[in-house]
Length: 159
Image 1 (cartoon, one colour):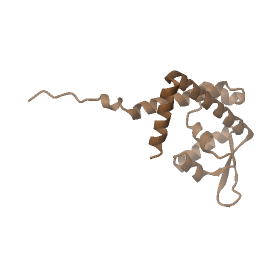
Image 2 (cartoon, rainbow, N blue to C red):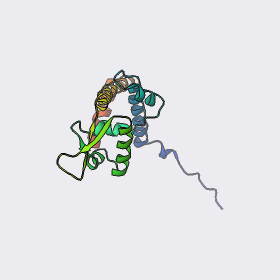
Image 3 (cartoon, one colour):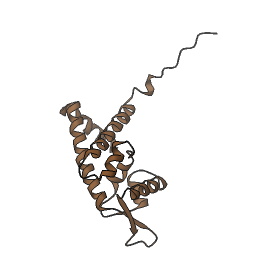
Image 4 (cartoon, rainbow, N blue to C red):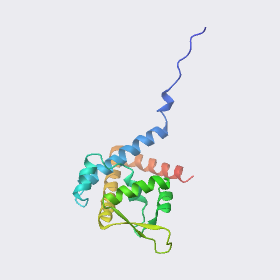
């Protein structure tokens, strides 16, 4: 029997998707770390974020919930999540005081999810943390490289 050639496995981690995933994880972790230190973030949430008890999934609500409020099904679609997963995330964010559910003004069967005042402060802190994380990424990669990568990713994502 001829010797078998071991399977090539480097392709599993040597591709653009792998690097994008790792970069995304690093970026989200940095945003949460910055938010843990932000003075507008309530102390309880700050401590949870500092102890890695606030997962990056919370950023789905932060980035996709319209400040005017949204139905759960629309929020889930905007974040590319299932309604069930988003429902669980909204419940967690309610417990943290970031969002509240109230009757929907145009659909008696639906609830509207809105940021609380604490949630709006969280949203503003997230905006600042995201800008700082992006500045840090730009400094680490170099302005020109970061610009090319960003433009390339934007073009690829739009297809």
